[in-house]
Image (tube, rainbow, N blue to C red; front, side, top):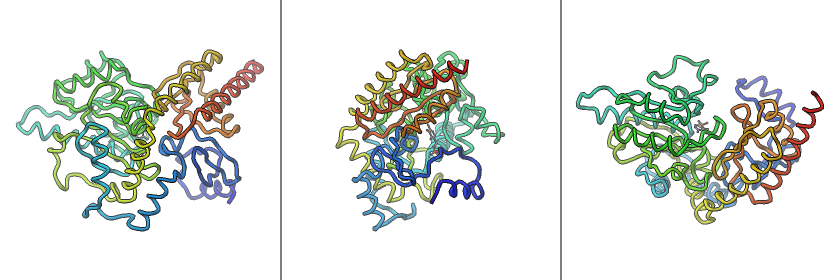
Length: 409
Ligand SMILES: *Cc1c(COP(=O)(O)O)cnc(C)c1O
């Protein structure tokens, strides 16, 4: 198969929703992705944070093939051993009590919004004022389905699909005064990503997170955190909220949880669980034996190989190298992020786009998000030498693009 023929067929038979990089992927191994033409790429995007243990990790492949031979799917009308095993592990590392499994990030976020509404009705039984408004953050990203979209504070995603779910208001990022102004007793939930991913790798400030926790706690509203991109150890702790000293009421997970298989999760409290009963929510595929068995193994590997401490240390190193580059290249406006969830904001969208393309030509995969931000989401199995390769290439690319720009003036 050649890229040209696949492109032609996709152009004919697929919906035109993706702007793909010009690589026909054949296979992956460790930190590398291989094109059908045999070219090897160092992957610092890892499937947008999904392939947290790299490609074809032997421990995951072993569980995957063994379970595939035994049982791939059974409906949620039956028990199988891995949902409970995985839920217990997730409760243990999160400090939350209970789990609902989904297939994707947006499905987890939809469920979280539904649970917030159900909980508000449940505690409001005695006829108090209705409480159903939700506050979300400007520039956020929570997924593509209607509820998720309604809480996604970016016009470009929402506009073609209005009208959306009513009752959502957006708060200016890290603006405590704006939060206080918009929060009142009609709010049932404050929703946010502790680190905005799609929105340009922007960590919420400690002050803002703690203000949201205090306001919601006092009034009985919920704090819902989207850790679909930041969760499962990427930031150097299992969950980004653990850097903030807060315990949320609901947390959503997805991307890396099953090492590449589609799986998401909603983590929540016993109190919220009491507002739910059989039949109120469900899914056909979510929490299946194959994805859950692999996810248990993902957590085993993270624990056994002490990857949290490693992610924190490598992340620090990577961030320092990027800050050094910032001193040298005036086009880097800011370096942000936590652990191995890092972004470098450049001073123009065209430059960021050209940088991603030039890095790809050097055999390195990174990504651009929110127009101007280079995003780095490497797998947890990278080594210091891989960071050095990426930083050196970035140094060269930014240098030569700046020289080109100067010559054009
Ligand atoms: C990717 C992402 C989603 C959506 O997940 P899907 O699996 O694509 O539906 C939601 N929230 C955040 C923070 C994400 O990064």
